[in-house]
Length: 348
Image (cartoon, rainbow, N blue to C red; front, side):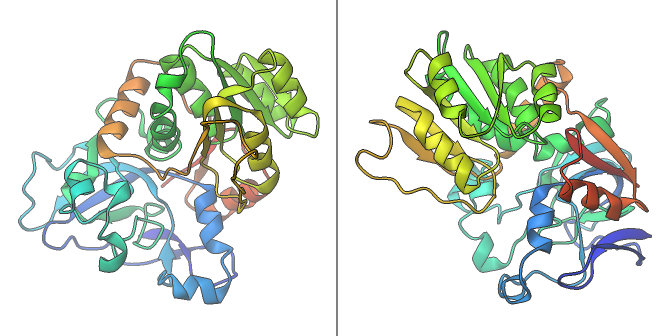
């Protein structure tokens, strides 16, 4: 089969031919129907060799932590209602299945994963950018039903991650409140839709170029602003001088985190989702009183089911650009060039 793999540190990913894997006991083999492209992949591939090896990432590594497919073969002993031919989405943050968090479906916060070497597909385990992929356990598959896999595969991260982040802040986002979304690309444009579907907040969206802001307007943002030195003053003006009740930073770079900190209202939430390498210094007088700063990771299995239900109800929609598996390397070139509108999806 063909697979898009990271084969050497510092080199671009390559499409290679490898054997179709065989599912072991408890595993499931999927025939992949769609795989999403994410900045997290780019982050891993840009790690210096020392950091890459210290984190025990394998080489070669099949990319892709957003996956959807058709159940092709069940490994020995799979105890599940799954049947060959079922359409499924892959829940990416794999955990041990035994710890307290995993028992509640929050494998994204598994307390045993690091010690036991459990890694998400494409981020340590072999991923979805191939014609077939192994899923380590049937509990990591969620029914896709009649949802289009190409249109919805990105919801397994680009939908689940903002949903998890926003859900925690919903008590602060009733009528008359303001939510700021910084970065309106792959995750941010879905986050805007989730805010409009679930909250009463007025949504203010920021990005660095007009094309991204056109997308933000298209998906429902109430106000759009260029993210520059004047953005904080404009947000204060829009919020009557009070600031935002919740700020969601889908970039996570130093300038965006500083912006988020500066426009947070009293008793607000500042949630840093992006992995742009930024940092924030918090202390008395550096942020509004009672503001809470959170750094979430992915989401729970039950939240993925809820996200797919929102898509099924027509409440959220991912803007996608599709690439063949052979054109997979080009998808990462376009991602690095910041030229993708919404989310890139590879279709084997």
